[in-house]
Image 1 (cartoon, helix red, strand yellow):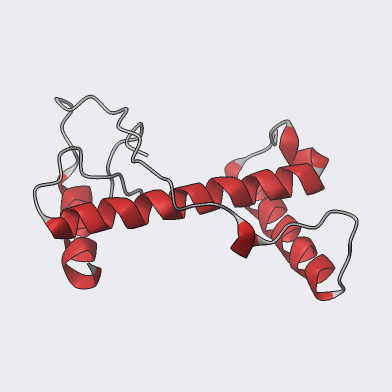
Image 2: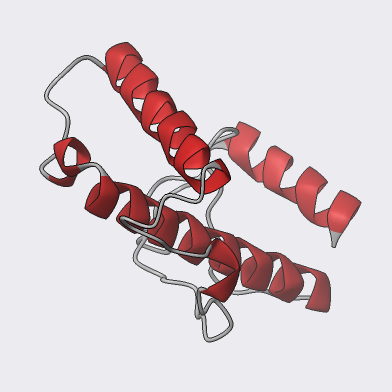
Length: 123
């Protein structure tokens, strides 16, 4: 969401979309954000160690999260019914961009260029 700064590796919505292309980008980004948040919720319910936060270095946290994703996928493949969630059933249609960033805050140029390239190339 726009509560974070725009960088080349972290996309935020257009604060005031001026074109239909920018509106489509915002809608797609919002749907993706919601899906990711819901996926993290699924993993946190299934793996309680994630629920309270990982108290480790970022590199180790990436390994833990990757491992939980792999274990989750193995459970799905083996039709484990202990905790069952279907990503396709999640409701991601009613989504509005969260505009939390100060509109006066400057966006980083590399992020602006990357977002424009994605917007123009895919939307």
